[in-house]
Length: 344
Ligand code: SF4
Image 1 (spheres, helix red, strand yellow):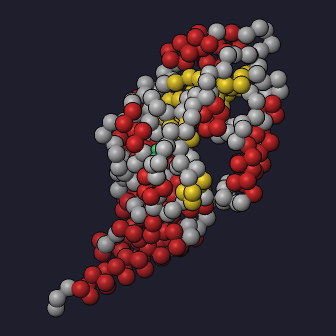
Image 2 (spheres, protein in one colour; image 1 turned 30 degrees about the vertical axis):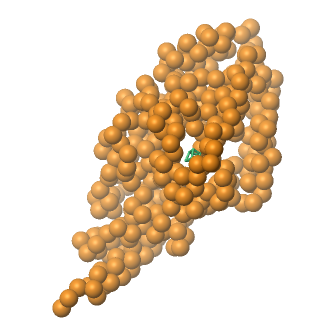
Image 3 (tube, rainbow, N blue to C red; image 1 turned 135 degrees about the horizontal axis):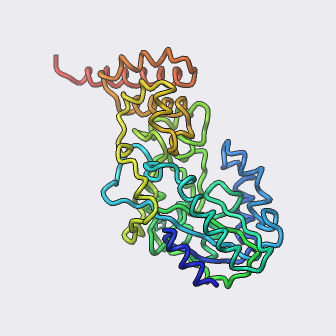
């Protein structure tokens, strides 16, 4: 049965498919401690769904197996950019969910009538990295993301929880050794210790999950990143095994590799929707993106961006206007410092 499942997953384009039991993840107590320390910041849904995350039986009573799936988003020749690599495609939730529905029906048909299965991609109440390590799909690195020996760091995870009993695969073990590259590379020191991330400092959290004002002290470290951050993933030596997946490459948005910050600063609501509908960037809406653009311009812009930044200080959205004001002050201070060092 498992070979038939793997074969169907491959046909649908998934790059890996493993199975584990539907018992609670052994790491659940660490997750609870992480929440108790408040390191999730404003991601309140993580607390709300704690019971589901720490016990698959709450999600699907009678569950016997969890199938974990990987879809690589590695693309050759796209190392850097102000938008995280995963977001340089159409929204992966939509893309993967179509295939997951087909695979979930297939799983249910493998069992006796009455077999029930439930699929999730990323947003589900599942401790997906922990479950994936137990299924042998990869291991959680010191940066707290999942790493596959076959795919490196660049892949999406999805799960099917099912009442079908399937033979579990052997678990994977941690393979970071003495490496600490990701810890050193994090621009905001958000990896406070190996395997411990304080999400409140993570640039992905600050530019995507956080809806309000970005703390002033953290803005300079964001650099020119306007949607997420790849630093800890980029430096990981396991990326030498990264390989291009079948599914995502069809949905790449090559223009997202390096977006023009000034151009983005002038976006109205309808133009924002036209450009970003159906992509992960849509999630932060115009106000979130322009907030991030202001921070990036404040960190990197020179005199030519000041006029547009001044206009943005009058934006109808106070969040954008406030961040634009901060950016004006940053750029102005930088210009005067540079002028001070020039000969008369
Ligand atoms: Fe582990 Fe090094 Fe990769 Fe960090 S960069 S996840 S320490 S192997």
